[in-house]
Image (cartoon, rainbow, N blue to C red; front, top):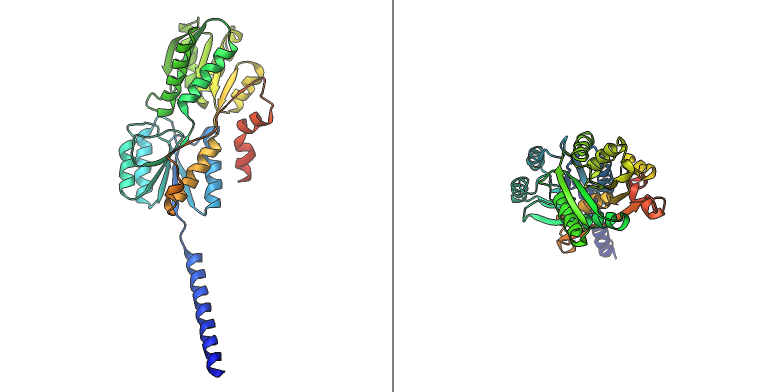
Length: 328
């Protein structure tokens, strides 16, 4: 009996030591570090991406760093940020490329150091990317063109306001739109311009485009800053009612434009999902769950116009950051 008591006491002590040891290891375990490198840190689109990313980081106990350049054209700054993140010991990068080609070497170098790579919003020319999460940009371009074709009668004379010519998502949107217009047989793409992804510059360039081509009766703008700029350019014209504008993403200015008539339709993406799923995928890659990470994830995209502006689905799409971001 005494022997049994000693054995029981020894087992109890051993279990207690094991539990303490496991608890101590768990308490002191360092969370994985994930760095999200965006194209910008200023627009409502990116604020919504960040809200989703932060929600996922909280859920999966990740140390999340969010950085980005001052402008959406500075791919060199992005490359420096990649190198600095790797040097600082990041375990994974969630990356939106400004330049499909010129960001590739920095991403390849990071992957060679064992860093996991997730691309969101805009892809990069690197085999190291484990998954791309974002809009089907060709289909979004088709959607933008079809929105005009379905709502404007007669011949369409189209101007396209695109952003950086080296950004993969903008070029795919342009290709989808141009091919859709061409197939329609009643639309002519009069001019395509590439401008800086800054609203005031896009406004100036749109004004110049409309002055040079007064026959334009349809404008497509392919991201948030260019859409804001195009809307402001139209506001200042006497023939504003004769120009049909399809923009991208959600901004207070363009949503107001839907109500006052300067914007006719918005192609609204799901940036919150891009941020959330991007960080979630990084977590899975870092914790041996690579089989659960698909190569491409198409986040939802929808058309919002004056007819459906106040529907529940449209309000959720337009105000993702306010509804989800502030509660995360």
